[in-house]
Image 1 (cartoon, rainbow, N blue to C red):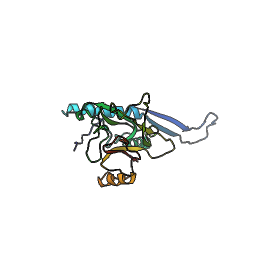
Image 2: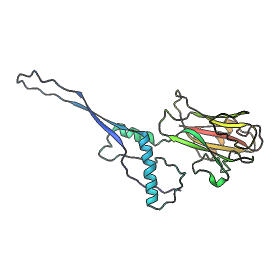
Image 3: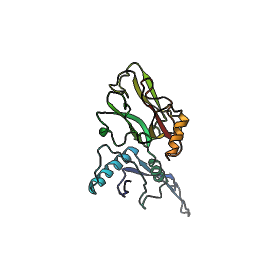
Image 4: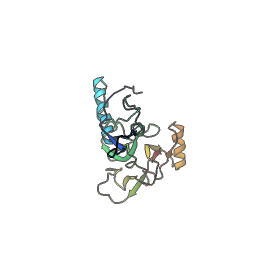
Length: 250
């Protein structure tokens, strides 16, 4: 289990103040008066700056204390709090709360020549079996690599496997150099869906599984609720294991 280390850093942001209500006293003839002025304070924080800072400071801290960190490793926020001087800001508190939930925005594809080349943060197989899409087939080793965001407008709402006889320009084939059909993982981004993808798992099986059976297997592994089973077998029409891509919604 990874150890926990507290790292303090400054988040790039913009602070602003604006007067909401004032009082015009230009016509005063000496009479007594009183008035109150309300000040609206705003804080603007860039999620891009925040996540970049987390990554940079995490690596700096790991190097400082002598941790052997893989260049392929990714970092996310486990917990966060503001200093006492600004922790009464509702805006900042809401931002920190939202940034704790890392969302998947895309699935990249990595090719390799052996299991040892897999990136640390690739999509793992549910029970620890090989996550190489081409396992049992010739061709390159192939792994799915999640790309993350904290911006809900960029987050994925689901995944779809497409299998076809012709190549699609600009897309990476999940069956690289294996011959036969081309296989692709498509990411859905539906702005009208509130639930976003937070996690993904491959499920390798010797027999066909329904989406409901996949979800039951995931629950038995103690990974909680919110999972959606894969509809299509990635290895459809090429033999070998049945292979599904399941994902979790928040």
